[in-house]
Length: 155
Image (cartoon, rainbow, N blue to C red; front, side):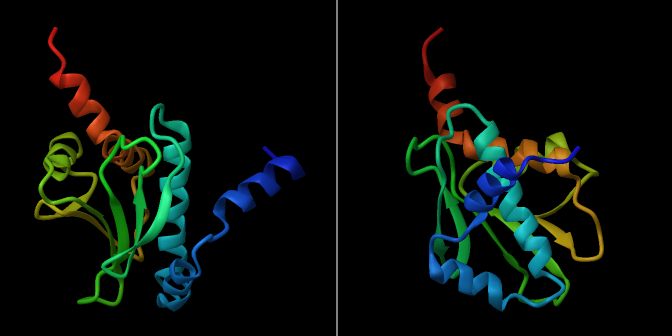
């Protein structure tokens, strides 16, 4: 289905970098990984926009990695993305290691994705990502605090 010019212009504005430092990090990624990481970035923004309670994301650098924060609503846990420095063809989505997020993802999607301890989901540049499963994981991270608050309320 072809999108209207207005829809395409709105998407382009949403995907433009607002932080030159973040844009520089993406520009410096190896050619084989850059499109994969840009696709992850787009997936995070799309998932945030489609997930109730998340609000506008803040994109910044944390530890030199592109990071996505729910600053406006405080609904979620920070998500970071980056190449894996130890290999030339792998990249990851990182989550706060003191949450149970990766443990939850592993229970929900034991065979669909590869995990690194309690901190990340990793991918190979020559493989497709399981988009629906990853969208669900991203939505869970972006609503982590919101869901914790809901479950802490008395019944």
